[in-house]
Image (cartoon, rainbow over all chains, first blue to last red; front, side):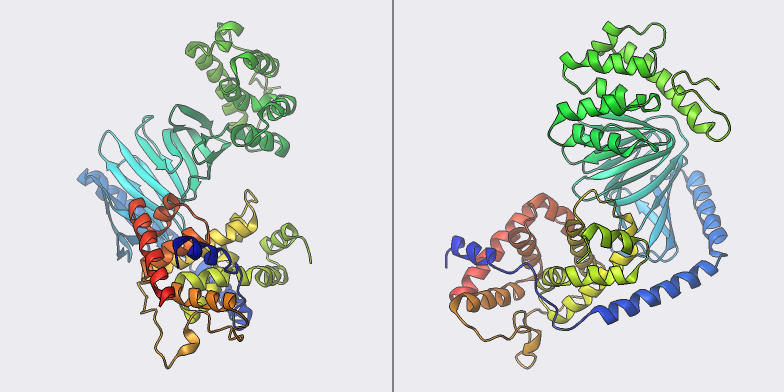
Length: 331
Length: 179
């Protein structure tokens, strides 16, 4: 048999094979048992302060030692560091992989600057741990990062690009190919793939795709059709139609998406995008149409500062004051 | 049959009847994958159960950004590979003669009606007898259509190792089938 004959035979293999017996009764029993265990665990409320205390101790030790490894605390189950199962706490050294299964979680104390919760089914490696740079590699899964440090000190690499902390809290998830989602809950994160980058402020999300990298961010309450149009523009065919939809659907509070769109359309289309953006959120003094269309960094930064300020006020004053999304002033 | 999206939404809301229907629809696909990745019928049954138990836990994280079947397939691959990595519970895959029911292909003991069916069973058996590393790469690459880069990530090996394992698996299979 030659290789082609082998591959032909492989191609004829059925994709589906019925199990020899009905597995459902066992599955149903395990699900029911799991639910009972889960409730029993939830009743043990005292684990919460104990885990928090353990994290605090780990943080303090890390500060005192100023080491180049991170302390790790098991929050649930028994995560793996390398091939060693973590009982309660341990050390994650540069080059080590931390891995959780479907029932384990862990908390990493990131030097003196913050913490990363590693959710179930996640694989993360410590790449750099120094005073000037803290860098993790997230191969797959989900992490919740909270960092209190100067910008560009904490980085998380994913298969599709790098999340750069600008002083923030966020949730980052990815599959092993790089398809993922970034949700920022505090501060701001920049996500970079090659020359393409996106800025995601608190209360905004961003899709990530392999090769393409970061999509355009959108606010948490963005209309679903707008989100679909943003995804279509960034990752699918039919960009012209997607762009028209984005411009038609965007509201003043979606200005942060349009600011990114301005930099991603062809030069000939920038004027259209700019005009729509300027209608929704007028540019600040000193930012001209010509400079913005030319993507002059000073103009773009000036516009972003205004958009970011308005967005920040909307987010932090939500439910307290009614903020005009065009100006950022209370109505 | 309810539309898949409706079933998924109902199962996400905790409806076990809908979840059971999802099991009915996808069990064959998941079992086939588990059977080929593990090379052992009993392990495949266990892993299939693991996949659906884990699916019940993770269902709420499915956002519909990909087809449900693709998402579930990926979950199943991770379950099987994680099990091998974390427990190291791998046994010799060539089943002893006194336990023929465990050999892949023997759990569907339909008579061999023609040479194509015979070749299929021989091939399934030969795949099951491959060394673990070679079998996993072969199943993921040649049967399931994953790329070497992705396999390297999933299995935790270098991309070059994945290519070498595939080459080795194909050579071993040709040798086994020519005997």
